[in-house]
Image (cartoon, rainbow, N blue to C red; front, side):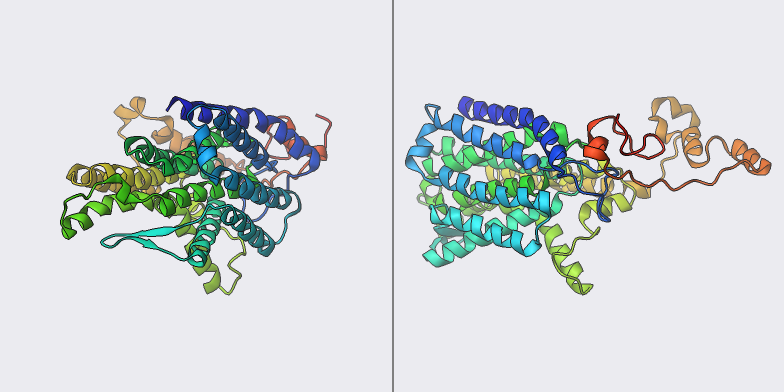
Length: 448
């Protein structure tokens, strides 16, 4: 565990320290496009954050290769090299897209190439776990096709959810944390060496996200771009393929002397975490499927961007930027850690009840903007200012109702002026200096 934590810390530190210089490099090279119709940020923000994340990935693999216990992962398995090769391909495609906005079909082709590179080096599905039946062997072509499909789906799911500051990095960090707990339990608890690469990938992925999040939280100073979102999606898929398609649950020896019915019941919680990567990206995958159906129904291309994603809908119903991100974090953690907890204590009804209760809490949080809290005046000193009646009146009309009526009668009420987002300044000045959001505060192109 100490070596995994060291690898995580080194990955996070390298990613964090590289993000600052990468931001300046992105501004200097002009990797800072104008505001698009579907964007929620107000000023041009540099991309290419995936460069720092790729540097953290390389540093994590390099450190792990020189540690006493983790070095055996590189000696007994070719999966770390396969991951690095596929990551380099998808990272290069992402960097080109962040800079030049390449076509969606070209990106899709690059994703297939990256998945094929990993398959060619041995990172592929060898068998599938089927509850009630056991391990079902697949042919080489079937395993390769399933591997490529899982990689491409995961990459696009993470890429689709990358729409708010800190959303994709935080959700993937939560997913990789849950996945690390399960993979480490298989590797250390049951002594199955085949789970060691997946555990290492999860630790490195956690470090990449933790190191990048301080720069990417709202308001973000830099975006990971496609070079980062596709990269972390590929690393997540690589861990899923490693533990799902190559770790044999029979090696855990959980079913010795049990009847067929008992074996089927006992295998259920074992197989759920083996498919954990599919559950931890359940929200991104749901967003991906809904986007494809929505765009096809409207007669558009499935690759045509819009503002109909789940995070956009959270903003539309009244959630703030930070609250929308936290709600997505909540549901990701509930699904991922709920699956891990059920795999450990499948017979405990408390876990099921806890998941049901937390799901109800999540639904209340989703509908929170629909409710208008009205606290009594004697309790206003104990609640946040935004829930006080005086604050609501001030935010609605610029003061109390009497003041608003007086101003309206005097004819001094000014019409609200629509403020337009600031365009990119000379040499990216809007992203270097003071983070002014509107042109009346500082004009673009000034020397400041």
